[in-house]
Length: 574
Image (cartoon, rainbow, N blue to C red):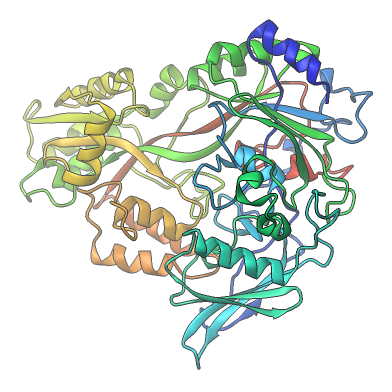
């Protein structure tokens, strides 16, 4: 564990304890029956990654996963120990899946093991589940999802049991405990055991997220119910069924994980261990990335595009979860005589923006210009370079404004850049480009709370142009709900982007279980139709990770939230 070594690092550099990063599972499935009322076996031996897996030429051949210059660590029994700095200070406590302070995926996924998880394209990723069936029960008038567990899952060793089994009884107990602690989706009717290793969830309504509505991760019932241990003990001593077990956790400092030798997948995980160190300061992160030997951090969650761009120029690898698309968000309930309600004006605005220039000058090499709002790797992205909002063409933009009956300078807009996503420099660049085609504008840089209120609660005016990000969620149904209308009691992201009847119907269709890629592509085509242009995408932003060149075997899809292949890699696959 080398605690003294890392203590020395902490004192010497004010911080360098190593860390770990996150993920668990090896089998992926997706439901794709055409009839949403007919059950079907959706277990698959080959995961349909939908753009997550690159071509073989993009893989990084390497004999070792971690080591100086790619050389194998002589002390490593398996793939070495990964040191990761996710930023922030870490969770106050994270051993209990019902605790609201359980932290985030970069900490919880390495040791945890839920029944399922999710790929960015919305497909279900099996973890403890060996597969699931789903369907509709005519007699009960309820939908169901039934999971089948693997036969040999055990919890990490703990004071009361060396290998407490994970079976249907424990999963049922976990579901009921979750409900007791207030973690119960409103759509869930009941849950029942259907066999020693199978559990069925019952739902009132069909929804794309149903296979994910299960326990967060499993914990020990023996410890939870024992008078000498219980909930408080579990908060500080995480016990689960994941590929790594927690060795040490110090709040605001670090978490050490080591390989769980009795993980239910044979010869997995690939790594010896993972170490997470909390380095919230960008300077400290940069020092750690450039350090040698024991003081090195292998991977850092980038604090800013500028930081990522700096290391990209030095030969470090940048992986990105591009889940946010900065766009013009058009108001749909403005008076008909508002210039922004004229489709020719909307087309002209899109053609006025030189996206490439903005990303080249202000994106530090890590932002990408886009004309569609669903990013690559996500369900619904359209892999056609000609598809999207109108491309940069200022000459044609000026012609369109004239065709719409507006003289240069007649349209005056107020630009509302989203704090933290769109800098004042971005807004000034956009202002200049609009002015070049004859649209004048002012810039209103608001504080975050005021901008959020305008965006989500009050809406904005007919001559105000919102510059904000469209959030790509992990299921198509969730994406459209979170961006376009009320979702349960949550306010919509964009109050003035009023869904039409067609959008409402599309939202309902996107919520069905199964592969909704085609429906999501149709949704994109509808929103980006040149006579509508409800959104005008500008550039891709997202969660970035900076990876030291010594770390081999990282794929483009190994971004901050998923270390699936990194943890569970097989020899010979890279």
